[in-house]
Length: 156
Length: 140
Figure: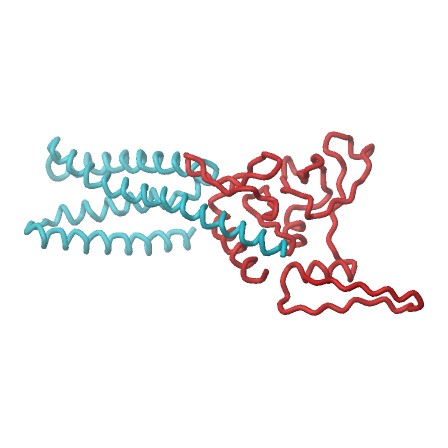
């Protein structure tokens, strides 16, 4: 995508004009940013107490996957694990345009961070990430996962 | 529950139709004939097999390989009970009859399991290629 930036020092009417051929996720993300609707997740380092830890704003693009364990939601990033004060369903809805798809009852994965998708000898299919971790793609979610990939390819 | 039973009966109808047509074709080609008991056994076997395969939802958390093996063993157990009941009502099934029955049950099961195994691997490969494509396109 070509980016043109114009500096008008005297102007007090800042604006963004966006020309697009198709409303794809990348365009949607720009719109969200301009409208200040870009989803951000705030989390605290998982190894610290909720009250003590400093809250950190997480960019969805940095998250490998979200894991729901014992009614707590954790985001796994390259910089560590963070506890998110949100529900998995809300995150699924919020991060749809950002490559996040549900692959089991407790996992939401970022397809842009998948290094490889490979089945094991026992026929379970795993998504491997850059950080070396693997998440199993549950059979019940196989169809919706496939539909999501096809939808993303169609609109990107 | 009602909808699950309805779904099961519809699947059973489809499975039995396919198996009986396949059986009729084999009989025509081999020049053999079947009898009423064989038809009933075939229907009950289809009912057992469909029921066992219908339980796949219970195995969501185990690997498909374990699911296939467990389902096969459960189906074998239920079929053994069926043969014992038929043996008690009609006439005892000979050892050759047991062997033939399990052979005709096992061979299609292994073929279908192998096909499923192949599908899992080929679908994962396609999905992996799709992810690569999406990742490449998003970088442009």
